[in-house]
Length: 536
Image 1 (tube, rainbow, N blue to C red):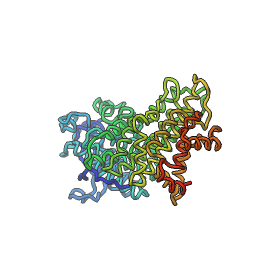
Image 2: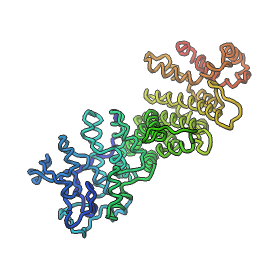
Image 3: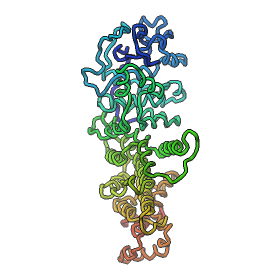
Image 4: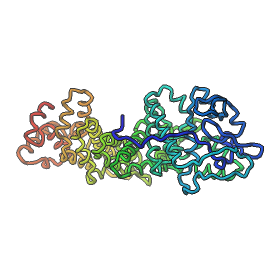
């Protein structure tokens, strides 16, 4: 879906000839350069290689007299050229990996002469933050074109997600590069969603970045100390750092078009990395690895829930509470309907993940505290109810889905907590809880059972009507599953309400759901009677 606000302006990019000093060893074989192993530049990606790793020669369709004859190309780029891809992604990857966003401006990418006698002798330019921004800008254009035509994406994206995504994520901190980097990440996740490739989303959560396993091992055993330091400090990210940077972008303030565009892209990223099916698949793979291991033998004995929590939190390092607060805030951003749509849609994913964590880790040291108990006091339910009257149909649909998810999640979490070890009494499935009663009351009092829901129920579109039915069912389901919510009891309460006795006269814990049912059928005023008769 197109953004309602333009992103940062596109920047011109050309492959950078990497300064000799930034490559003390060959990135192809990780052998240290010396008098006998000299540096050579690949004319496609601009990186520095030894002769053995850049021995190919080919004619490139690039402008300039030097490209009229076959020129040196590294082995990595030659694989792309052999597939007919003359615009290798390594052109972008090289500056993304070699520029250090944490280094002082005076030293990052600073040119200096090499003293190992293996200099290439070529004129090069510094790799600056502007080089990185231009690289990300052009990369975003390329990835967005793949989203529109994903048929050949496997031929074009030849860099593993475990290397490409962290290299992009390193540049989420500084604002100049962050607005381009977040756009690339959102496009990669959208591409992965289109083609069914979860590797991009997994790479955002993974701890390592910048190198694959063999490269990491080779660099760790390199005799060059500077090469080891660069590998550890520039190409490796701390666990959860990229996710925290994404959440930090969600907290940017401003109403200009570039800020709103960056917020929308960050919202898309959160939407995709919290998608329930993706999380279920990631956890399933984690469980298979934990239980089976390489020998495929299942482990016996009880499950260590604290260890399980630590494993899952190590994998899914996202602060659900923090993300939910940001999404609620952006769901009310009327200046950007597109941002509102993505934020409201993301709320459903965050609620589902909150429910999963609260139900799985409902007790013990690893207990997860759900944010659903705070949604009434914090105004979250009120905000979502107000979105039911939005002009945009998608926003209304996403808000309805989020409210339904909140009611269901609160009910399921209550059941899980009451079934936890050490809890007295019992919880009978199908009965409501104090917390979800408060949620239902808040929905009713804030107009959640108003004409918007009724219009959904009488819609000629079957999918819309089913969505309305699902929401209505979530509100009143304890009346349908709890024996105390029988038709006779409901008829008694209806008579009590009509006679002015009120619903509190039947104190069986179902008053909130009866009130919601009555408001759905009768409405809160006489003006609602006609339309609700149609809904009935």
